[in-house]
Image (cartoon, rainbow over all chains, first blue to last red; front, side, top):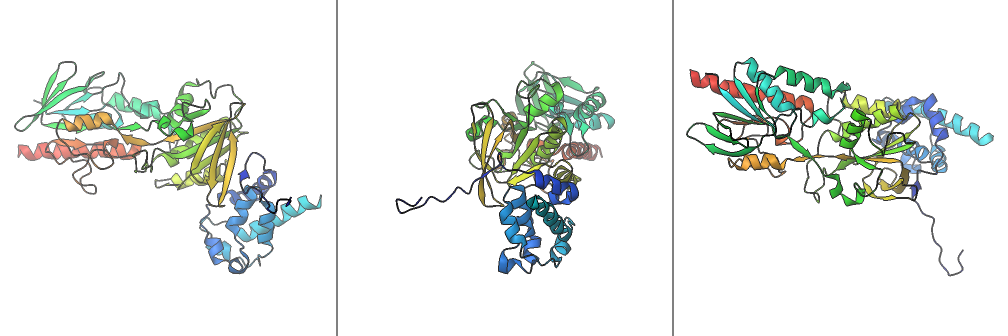
Length: 112
Length: 340
């Protein structure tokens, strides 16, 4: 669609009516703490991969809730499972375990 | 003869103050402009964080203060300052002389229709926190009863922290009230999805944070940081809410069956009027100005005039009750000091 020499970029708006939250709900059943994140950002600040790759557990959780799963997977590819985020989380969320659960649930879906 | 104390306002602060004054052997007179006691709390259903029925608290207070002189449907016509006391003239023609006046004039709920962009009074499915409590109490509201409610939104800070609405103060209780009501709605409509749109979550009180995590974890309530920018209606009568998810940095849109506006606490014009009769100072937020905001929150700059509860700013129920007791102790101290 560049007949006129310009393109229209797709809307970045999130429509909560159309997103499928079933996988996130499944995640919450296994990891009820996933819903307790209050987006403080301590995990992102301490993450050794964050400054090179943009990895952030906070953003991963937010993306999954808002149906932006691809974006979450891109970030998670850079996680080294070092567990520093688990240490700093003020809500005591076992983020390392959470990341492994995310991998398990979302990976299973993709193989279907 | 028993010392008379005039209490302006028969809400929970006035009732609690009357109760304590009676215990100390004084003669309180409550002046209430409405035809019933209990103020805003009497219109509420349950109170955070323990879900105490509001009716229990109001009924207890009315019972414990029943020996006070109570004038319903009565307003203050004027107040005159005498040498060392005050002459209060009531709208029913009764005149009272007293050395002490306690203002428990409380607050007003912000009129949500002033925030036109939220559509209260314009779209059918938009209601306020007070409307929702009324529904909890009466089960009568055509917008909710018998309807298939699947998606519910709560808008925090309606008329609070809003300089354009001329209320820059935080109303303190709306964050926790929104969470309370969100949980209650989720219990009434278990299949529904509930969204809370907030700027900050100000959960300062005892057990408030526990309430928040309970809402997130046990009830799956979605918290979206971002102020609702506009509300519109679709052809099915549902409301479409637009906001920015400021954590994701992206605009967001959602269709809801019900939108609840958390109207904040604003100053009561009746309280300003009653204060102006004695030239009492009004603070920049419109509420009555205490002689000191740290040490003497219940004292006015004028001798014999005291304040308790939300007439000096937004307060929770326990804070209001504590202030009522504190003001009574101040009055008691002044009386006993004079007798020595």
